[in-house]
Image 1 (cartoon, rainbow, N blue to C red):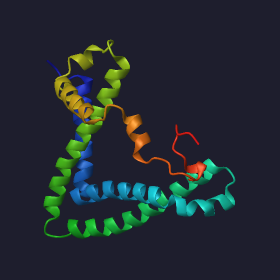
Image 2 (image 1 turned 120 degrees about the vertical axis):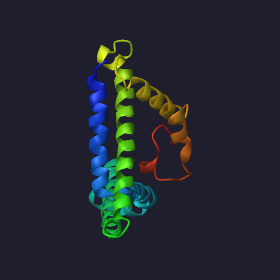
Image 3 (image 1 turned 180 degrees about the horizontal axis):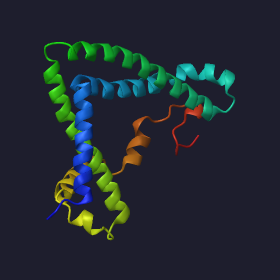
Image 4 (image 1 turned 45 degrees about the vertical axis):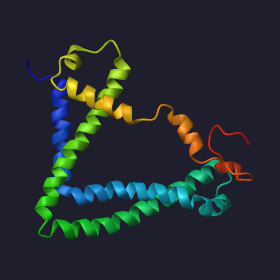
Length: 184
């Protein structure tokens, strides 16, 4: 049985992701993920302090909120990126640089697989019963399906309720920062 377009796409995406991660190294890849998490955490934590300044220039509350959070996110991402780039460059130039690159390649292969699994889940959800033969006959079908089922089992049953209950609105809080779906 020959390779189908799905098999070829899986191999190409995994290989490209692996090679990119190998060039950057595992530490830089992990720091990159950490940078995005740190920027998101900083935006959530500090936007209330920046919001009054943004409101001086932006009259629409939602736009002021978005500008505050986005500004903090971008600045934090840039600062953390500069710091982590220096650290990861030092590691790549050290004696463990080859190990870092090798582990980066393995990480990249895994990341490529996850990207393809998510794309596969979306595609099978979109097509449901009308899946073309090149999907059903793919050698990678069972791997993508079982990994997708495993990823889906990690998700909460009701993610919307979980997000609503994550941070209940305090009495007297600013309505511009009220979570969607909550009553004033």
